[in-house]
Length: 366
Image 1: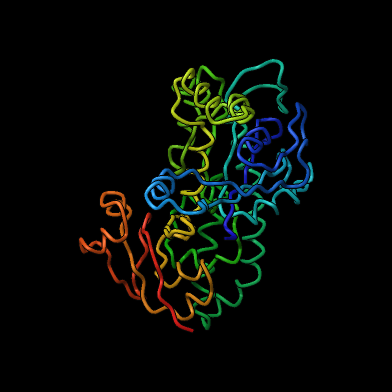
Image 2: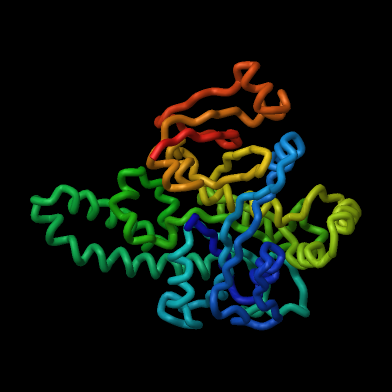
């Protein structure tokens, strides 16, 4: 799917180190600003215990997980909206993403330089917020200038409604707030959808902390939590350096022992990947057979024909019906045959909205 998350942050906050942990693609990670120039794109497996459980029951020839795309975008600096630090290019990379993972440095270490000379994650957040807001303001003002006369003439109701939304967004941006804080309704968002505003994108703040703070946080993360309380945004604590050490271990057993010593059940990047998946408004359905047990990615709210189309366009075009088993029923009863016998296999039509975890088989004819 085309949906992807962009990792953003000031230079040298741990973005590339984190990206390296997430993906087989390796971004250069070094202790100096502008290490990353071109955006690195990684296709990352989404950890899902349900897939493994289904595979244990079905014993297929192959197992195929679902994935999400993560883009490592070079560090922004003050003046990015005016082209500073290759800012226009970086902002264009963000515009192409569907959601933002904003990495903030929340650890003190004199050996790791900070582009602004001191550690202050709230200031860092505001720097990037300001650059994104200024770029959006430029975009909004340009659109206002194009449709204002048309909207005020009274003959074009759509233009008038669009202008109303644009003025609301303009006022918000001028007050130093991101457009997502407005809580625009779906109809309003549709009117300005083609602007691809940066500050309308859903965001998750990832606080890169030292090892001692990964469970409880610290003064820096407390300040971030307070700063984002009105944004309806998620916050996650992670230690990029520790995650890098975990990722470097050669096998599963070594990683398991290392995590046990730290008192952790799983790597923090697993939580980050799942959170990114959620941020993109995605969910998973499964197909399960002797040849393959596979997880498929769809957007929340998609119907059965749309889900079928992810497998093959012919499935959507010639959709007839879908056999559906809830994941919980499948693992409780142990097989498709047992679910069928117990009446837990349902036939669903074109209007069925797929639920997260559904195990599905599609009937089609073209």
